[in-house]
Length: 176
Length: 193
Image 1: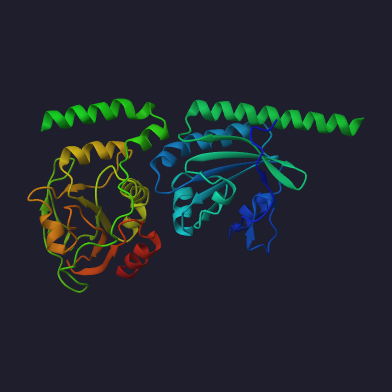
Image 2: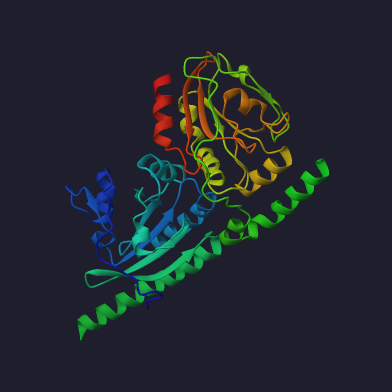
C-alpha cells in the first residue's frame, strides 16, 4: 500500500551520527561519514522532519514519542527505524531539539534543505513513512503539520498493520 | 488597551490549540525580502551596554543593569511580531534556554511592538519563557540607543551579548531576512565562561 509514489534511492545524504549505538540502530557501517535514506537497514523508516525553531514541531514531539513507543510496544520495532531530520538546522540545532525532547532515535541536520530535492514543498513539521521496495524506498504515508496524539495513534495502527501484513505475506511466500 | 489585549489573547488562546499548522501559518504576515540592514550601529564591542528599563509582557519591567554582577545577558532584537523569521527565532531560543543558562546567560527579547501585540504573539509561538520586552513607547528608544532601529520603525534582527560587568562582548546585526546560526552565539557564550 503506497500513498505516494516518491522513490527515494540516492542523491540526498546526511552526516552519519557520531554515536556508535545510533549508527548501529540505523545499520550504518562504522566508517560511514554520510548516509542516505536508502542506506538505513530496515524495511520501514519513519522520518520526522523538524526544525528546532518551529514551535509546531516542538508541539508535535511528544506525539512522535508516542508513535515510537507504540511501535516498540507492538513488537515490530526491529523492522521499523525512526530518524529525525532537522530541516535547515545546523548540527547543534538538530542535537538541541533531539536532546530537549529525549528522542530515543537519531536526529541529523539537513542544513541545506536537501530533503526538498525529494519533496520540493516540504515544511517542518512533516512526518514521512517509507517502505523499502527492492533497493529503493517508496513513500508509504505522510502527515503534514501538527502531530496530535490521535494522529500518532492512527499512524501507529497503520504502520503496525502494514508491517505485520508484510511480514505475514513474506513468511507465507517463503513457505510456498 | 487592556480590554483589547484580553480579547485578542483570549481568542488566540481558545483557538490556537485546535488550529492546524496551515491555519497558524495564515496568521503570519510575510513582508517579503527586505533591505538586509537599515540602520547604523551606535555601540561597539568593549563599550558599556546602554542601560534600559522596558515593560515586559508578564507585567514586570526589566532593567538591564539589574543583571550586572549576576548574569550574562543575550539581547535579541527582532523586527516585528507575526512575521516569518521572528516567529521561529524566538521559539527556537526558548527551546535552548538551558544551553544559555549553562553559560550564566539570560535571554531578553525586544521588539518595537506594543504589549498587547507581543502578548498575542507569544501565545501563537507556544508561550516562550523568557521576557518579551516592548520598545514601543517612546517608540524604539532602546533600539535607537543601540543603533538598531530601522527606518520603518522596526528593529533590526540583532544579537547583543552583555557580560556580567555590563560590557558588550558581541554584536551581530544580522541580515533581517535570515536567522542567525545558533553556533555563532554559543561560541560567544562559551568564551564568557
